[in-house]
Image (cartoon, rainbow, N blue to C red):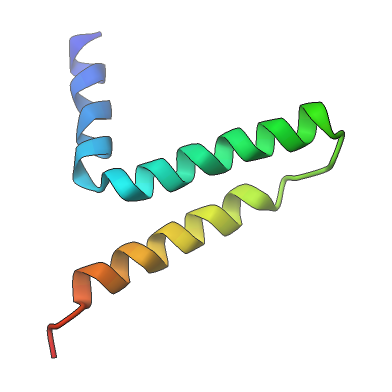
Length: 64
Protein backbone atom coordinates (compact mmCIF):
# COMPACT_ATOMS: atom_id res chain seq x y z
CA UNK A 1 0.00 0.00 0.00
CA UNK A 2 2.83 2.40 0.81
CA UNK A 3 4.45 1.79 -2.57
CA UNK A 4 1.15 2.59 -4.31
CA UNK A 5 0.77 5.83 -2.35
CA UNK A 6 4.31 6.88 -3.24
CA UNK A 7 3.65 6.12 -6.90
CA UNK A 8 0.46 8.17 -6.78
CA UNK A 9 2.36 10.99 -5.10
CA UNK A 10 4.87 10.93 -7.96
CA UNK A 11 2.08 11.46 -10.48
CA UNK A 12 0.78 14.42 -8.51
CA UNK A 13 4.28 15.71 -7.78
CA UNK A 14 5.47 15.34 -11.36
CA UNK A 15 2.98 17.92 -12.64
CA UNK A 16 0.36 18.79 -10.07
CA UNK A 17 -1.35 21.25 -12.41
CA UNK A 18 -1.98 18.57 -15.01
CA UNK A 19 -3.22 16.21 -12.32
CA UNK A 20 -5.55 18.94 -11.03
CA UNK A 21 -7.00 19.48 -14.51
CA UNK A 22 -7.60 15.75 -14.94
CA UNK A 23 -9.16 15.47 -11.46
CA UNK A 24 -11.39 18.44 -12.26
CA UNK A 25 -12.35 16.78 -15.53
CA UNK A 26 -13.26 13.59 -13.68
CA UNK A 27 -15.37 15.55 -11.22
CA UNK A 28 -17.11 17.53 -13.97
CA UNK A 29 -17.79 14.36 -15.95
CA UNK A 30 -19.27 12.64 -12.90
CA UNK A 31 -21.37 15.67 -12.10
CA UNK A 32 -22.73 15.93 -15.63
CA UNK A 33 -23.49 12.23 -15.85
CA UNK A 34 -25.16 11.84 -12.46
CA UNK A 35 -26.78 15.23 -11.83
CA UNK A 36 -27.73 16.36 -15.31
CA UNK A 37 -28.05 12.95 -17.03
CA UNK A 38 -25.76 14.10 -19.84
CA UNK A 39 -23.71 11.60 -21.83
CA UNK A 40 -20.39 13.30 -21.04
CA UNK A 41 -17.86 10.65 -22.08
CA UNK A 42 -16.15 13.22 -24.31
CA UNK A 43 -15.26 15.66 -21.52
CA UNK A 44 -12.42 13.71 -19.92
CA UNK A 45 -10.39 13.22 -23.14
CA UNK A 46 -10.75 16.96 -23.84
CA UNK A 47 -9.42 17.75 -20.35
CA UNK A 48 -6.50 15.34 -20.76
CA UNK A 49 -5.50 16.81 -24.12
CA UNK A 50 -5.81 20.34 -22.70
CA UNK A 51 -3.66 19.41 -19.70
CA UNK A 52 -1.04 17.84 -21.97
CA UNK A 53 -0.94 20.90 -24.22
CA UNK A 54 -0.68 23.23 -21.24
CA UNK A 55 2.11 21.15 -19.71
CA UNK A 56 4.07 20.99 -22.97
CA UNK A 57 3.71 24.72 -23.51
CA UNK A 58 5.05 25.45 -20.02
CA UNK A 59 7.89 22.96 -20.45
CA UNK A 60 9.05 24.39 -23.77
CA UNK A 61 8.49 28.08 -23.09
CA UNK A 62 11.65 30.11 -23.55
CA UNK A 63 13.73 27.24 -25.00
CA UNK A 64 14.29 28.69 -28.47
